[in-house]
Image 1 (cartoon, helix red, strand yellow):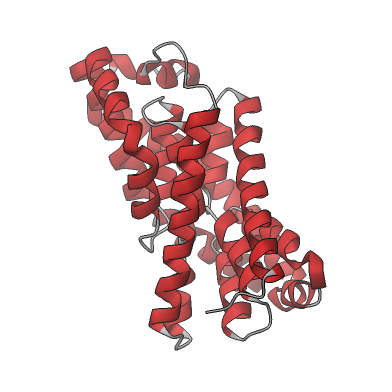
Image 2: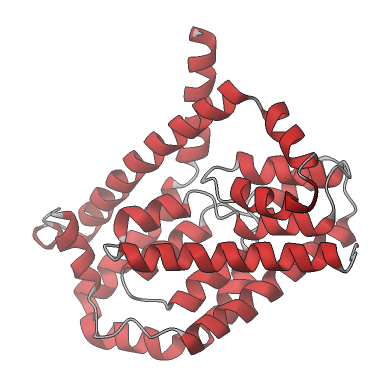
Amino acid sequence: MLHLIEHVIIHTLKDSLQLLPFLFVVFLLMEYLEHSFGQKAQAAVRAADKAGPLFGGLLGAVPQCGFSVMITNLFCGRVVTPGTLIAVYLSTSDEMLPVALSLRGDLFQLLKLVALKAAIGVAAGFLVDMLLPSHGDAAHIGDLCRRQGCGCHQSSLVQSALNHTLRIFAVIFLVTFLLNGVIEFVGLETIRRLMSNAGILSPVLACLVGLIPNCAASVIITELYMAQAIPLGTALSGLLAGSGVAWVVLFRLNKNKGENFKILAIVFAVSVCCGVLVNGFGLAF
């Protein structure tokens, strides 16, 4: 039991610590925008952000786990649009590419899967920005500070950014620790069996697994796909939904819980629908 707890703690530290640089950089950027440029800078960012879903979808496809967290912070500071956020969430590759390559997967096949995810993310992002209302009245990045009650306006930029970073890191660490504990207790093999035996419901189950805010989700789905235990559509559904711990950051920072659940519902619906369609047409790479 002690060995299990030690393993969970080490794995949690590994998952959480790699996000620290991303968190600090984005909070430092947000503090700089707020203190140095204020409303004019934020208005300029919003004006340039009409192409946000395109850039978000392309950058989200880069194999890393911190970009979705970075964009989530910017979204909570009302710097990027909901469409940009959703484009990033859907295109984010997380651990998929390195895991697949480590299993000697076909690079061209993997790049096509990444490109498909990015294309779906970009299309969904633009559609969301067309159909959903914008953020509304001009919001200030400083509002994020005031909601957290951290007294950032009385501190230096670096100290304020560090304050935000540590607050969010503590939440991420706690949630990741709990999830790693559950995964260790249930066992990856049990999850793999459920996924491979789900039949026509496999895209739904894969999506639910992908929504788990932990890199283990993308690892499980990628391994099953590479082992040909699940079809392309099922893997696509799970990988589209996989945004790592960004969901934790979104629900922690964004006070509009209805908006959070709406974003979650859109990602879920797009992921499942795409998976079902791909399986239904029997598409494969």
